[in-house]
Length: 306
Image (cartoon, rainbow, N blue to C red; front, side, top):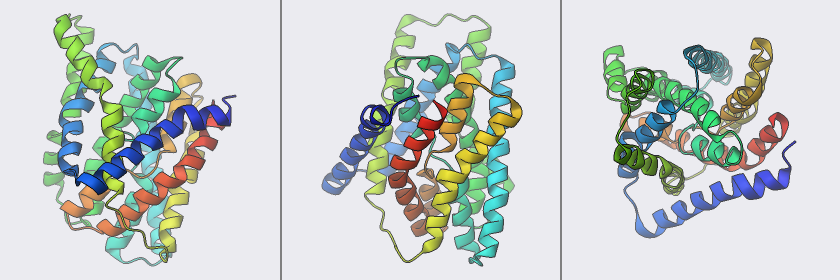
């Protein structure tokens, strides 16, 4: 079993220190958060995804299994959160923000650094390849269901599809698979460039996350945010654990799927709420609370599954 001191000092503390640096930089310099996010989405993350799929040992069957698991968990959480939102009698806009706080997880800014550091000395390539498949699926879901919720249900299916087709991750993973299985050898200069860019994802993602959290204000009177946090940080990994057991998934794949399910609320849920006039204040508070509490809950999750 991985010790608590190792998880805290070698994995989570480096993550939160870099988030803290981004937080302080934003307070001091007022960085352009949207530009930082776009650099990740359109350059650094696609480079990392391509490299991981190009060099991946995952079979097509494994990719389908990971995708099916991720999508099924997402919709189970969506059904539960929608039911809880109705029981709490939340207004429509707030109920949609509540659902997003539960179903949208931070697989990029938080998940990539977490998996990278956790598997740094053993099985990093396999673990990251699995995580990249999860990341792709969660991004598609975020830009469809998540976007629909953020706009309180006013975003059309045509506009959602257009948004998905603008996502570079989809084309990157396809290109990586084509180059891999057609045995296309890329020039060393291209591989080196993509590797360097991929290596830049971790610090850039964490700095951006810290900068976004620096703009968040918290309302301690709204108890529903705490309910959303419990569902995101505790219910989600418990469901993932049950699904792993039922489907007989073992080893590194089981670990990565459960740990990924314990990630805090996606930072992009705030950007979607701002852009499409959803409840941005609620989304921001959910991101802040789940990120802070994840220091405790993710530690517990890792200790249980490793």
